[in-house]
Image 1 (cartoon, one colour):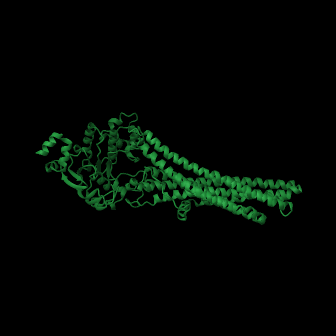
Image 2 (cartoon, rainbow, N blue to C red):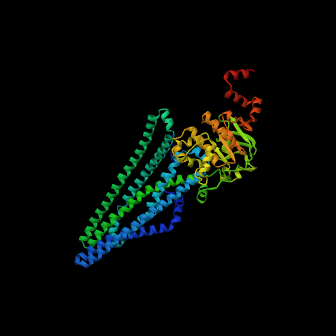
Length: 611
């Protein structure tokens, strides 16, 4: 499945441009410097043709060598000044673009970190990567060669027109007579390039989304022998992207020669009409030469501005998408900024010292209702209470809502009915960072980052010492395999933990949770990917870890939660049973049936049901 980019209706949007210009405000001094350099450079660019006119009309006929030397010196100074100003302009604008690109990327990343999981359910990763990389690069091009330098082109055009009219308004009208042709060619170019650019952007987004999905799922591709089919699919997407670029090349290939042709036509008209006036002594030869030189320079800014139209079109499209992302409301967590917190407090201290048992908490679900899709509730009026230090297991068939309970508790999503409280406080009224710092979560699908073993346990919190990391690893018996690695805790970890087994990654996730000394430990199918021997080791460690700590464990294997203080049974989104292992077996309800399915043979199960 591919994901198209949004179709942008305008080639220029004043609202978007005003918003883009706000990124220039912190660097207004640099903008003023660049604008001054651009204006100065444009003024100096007007001098050489006029100096040529003076030489031809005044000093060559009179044979004044000193005058020629004086003009040559001015010419040299003009060229040197033009070079210096162009260097200053280029350096300043490029630095400005890099700083703005940095600011915008940090803003986008900060917002992405705050968005709730529902947003990521709707948006493919490839598209979001396009926002942070390609779209920001397009805006960088706008700031470095568009929004400021376009004033230089306009100033040059106006300056040349003013000089031509001042020198001889009649010949200026001859030079300007080709402008309607330029307008027609430019309009044709803009209209077609705009559509071509949209198509190219759409196929870029499809390439990013396709590559991200296929590379992430390469194991499945190999397993089901989809290499040839996926290669053919990518070949089609890549071919469409290439063809869209080729079509845009056609318009450029026509536009530039067409402008050059019109420029040559203007020069021809100037030579034809102006040459006759020179012969009749109504125009000087120097003025004619200056007119030709100005006419050749006159069409350069027109071509540059037409090229900048493509930059502007891309910037409007990219800014629409970036601002659409930035304007996506944060439904969970309000205005809290994890990015600002990380800048001001790069290593936040944990609420509880690692060697102390944290204070337990009371968790209450009060008539909670929630669904990922409207009118399709996953949880229906669920109510239960987890007492301080209590160990609670949650069981139920696939789709019963077990993992949803954890997602709501951690505020990955907000409840749609009822409320969840911790120590009597609605979690929606709590600071999101403070709320999540209470929990240690061990998931079935473990995500490891590139780095080291120790880095994946402490996750950037450098105040967690190596000794504490070792202690956490030893508590879950992860030290057994870590000590066998060549670098121990400092052994490099490949992307997504590709060099580690599923069981080893699971053990590291346990160590990670324990290193942060959570007040509430949540285990979501945490031992489903571990072999029986490792599971026994983890269970032994958890007896110590769960002591005095509120624990919630979701499991399909009933053997992992039999020792819990209380077991909650969910069925089709409703809480159907609650009690200890023995109490639920005695009730002979849903839990009893699940127990039979897992621990009794089909023959014994049939005999039991018959009895």
